[in-house]
Image 1 (tube, helix red, strand yellow):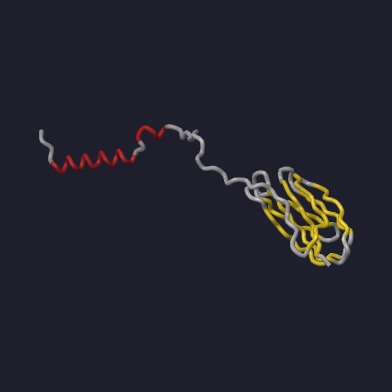
Image 2 (cartoon, one colour; image 1 turned 90 degrees about the vertical axis):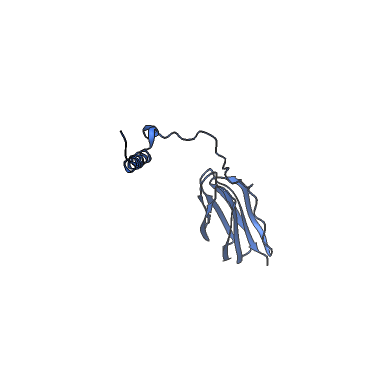
Length: 153
């Protein structure tokens, strides 16, 4: 029996189409994750450093390295003086807020990175309050340094 050439081509094309439309024998198998170790490494974690004192300022209160919430304490300064508060912080894994409060003066928050040291310098302006009480509120996994600096007169 002889088959015509167009019928043979049609049958071959149909076979190719049917084969390419199915996933073959692997379609019914569950996906198994690759257990080999990742070749992508996370970025390096930098060491945490203390803030430097800005030119024209003197440090009147400093603390660190510390971890988590802390009552930093009291500082006395001749008033009024322009104050700056420098914070260096690093979280253990994800972004975490650190809140600095200076009683009677103000507060601010810092988003501490889980990869790199976060550095923030917050200018508080002329502060007439002579006694300063400072607290830090954050999670236990956050490491930090803080420096309160007053303009030299």
